[in-house]
Image (cartoon, rainbow, N blue to C red; front, top):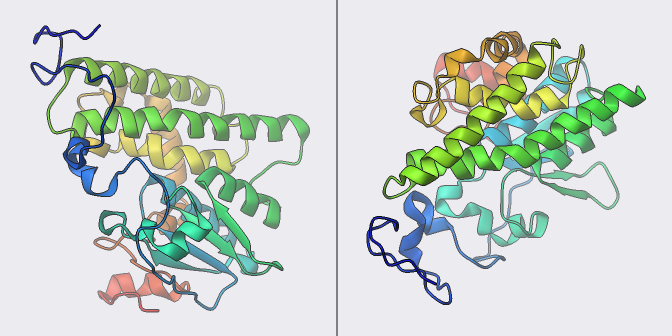
Length: 292
């Protein structure tokens, strides 16, 4: 039965319909790119650069995971990890272009093509891409049975948990068209619970999955490090200073060149909109822009 009490429903007077109907105005800040169906909305050919690995992404937490790994692989001398990174502007709907949808039918960044295989390999979902590249280059994924299991446990923890942080807390705290006390309280509680899980783990281990730096760290850092660094302008609200072990781990990662560089890729306003070779980073210090 629908609850018609305006004190219980938000916005005031909202009555739950019998059947949900799509209304383009009901998505808040991202209503223009959200829809209840999948598939391409327009024809668009994706560019292909000179390297076997072609990344189509944006410098959001999910995108940064992959560019951190690629830059870490290059820092360790894996020349086959050279890549071209192309900007996918999700605000403009680039993720619904025909070529992008052919790689990722879910229309989310990041997406990766590996042209070193025959036929080329299509990859989507950030966790899948991390696992694929770690196996391909035999790096940042332990071969020891128990260490590998721990790494995969924490990688999957991030994949399953972060939607409550971004789509839950972040959306209702920062992007929803009006504030809903229940929703903010619900997801703030869950976000702090997750931060406590991570902080507790890092009180026992140097890196998330143990003594080794792995793809689990690369996956978790952009989301939970982002929260501690002030994502959604919620650092004070969430009392992130409570999590000293996370801060210690973040300082460790942020001192790495691969992390520093990976955070800059596919960022149009404060980094490299595109990245095609290591020399592109040098252009940032001179004020030049990256060119294909």
